[in-house]
Length: 434
Figure 1 (cartoon, one colour):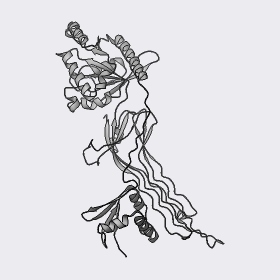
Figure 2: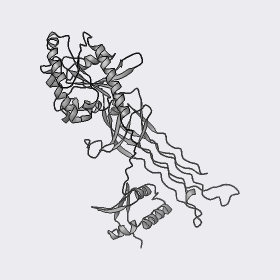
Figure 3: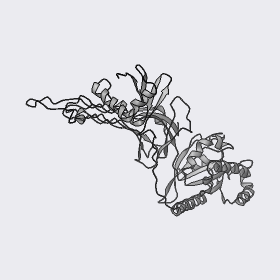
Figure 4: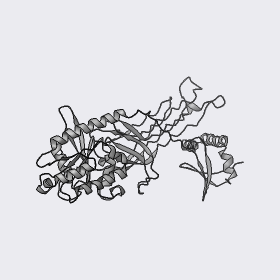
């Protein structure tokens, strides 16, 4: 089954805990701390595989978790960094954040993470957590034997939406049953399903067409468009995203339709409403099924009507294999024109946008029905890396709250003995010893 849109859950591995260790060697009476750092958790990475054409494998396996990093050890031994989880995707995959897997996708809350186009291109979708620092890092002139080490940082977790927009040089567009699949089979070695009923093509089919001895290009037969396709009717709404990637579109007009010209105008209207730029691309036009006597008889009338709209239609019959040589020439000319237009476009500098969380360095305290919550990426990360079972670690965290002013704000909002305070995934019970 062709899959061009899937949602998966990805989780980076936890960082390994730092070590609390001291040298214990003969003749070294005051060896001091030597606890090593924890290893980094594994990343979840998407990578383009040129041989893939569908996201179907990910649809069947939607959950992906990387392994945690190794714990630090004595003698300043660093924990092992965890291996990444590598997921292969086809060229043309667009990646966005998504809602929870049990909820329907909400386009208004999705954020573009990136897109993968070239073979071998990689994108990290969930970073592994950093390893905790061992106690060797916390030595000071007043604290020579720290028994404090950091816990590993949690890895990133999120649902992501993967959408495949096929990358083809040429796309065949037209109404259902216009003869696109039959034309693809006549031009290439592809074997798409062909039937005498609408919507025979339920997913894009790809083939390779040889225009000359040195030039081979990818051509896609895409599901047919009906009126309202841009609003989700029929199968065309799934096709429209793939049309965006093509350099050249071929207008396929059903010569056997009761009104071939009107049917094409409907298709063109849907293309323009999805993206007006699609209609500005080089677009050779063919009128199919010329082997049928009725179609051949009214060809002059249909040709004149289409020419009046600015097109230069070509009469073709995939079964009789007539008109295909002329079509190949038109395709080569259209591809050359697309390349010329691309070269004439002014070059623009690539701009990488960074979205900053306003709470990355700052923080805020908000009241909840059953306690208080501290928000802010920096303090949440610090809490996740604190070993609250260790007295030194607890004291160090308390000093951080006081230094940042969070302690005073918690008191101002009514924190007292027994109040629940949540910081990220950590839940604490406030205890006022003052």
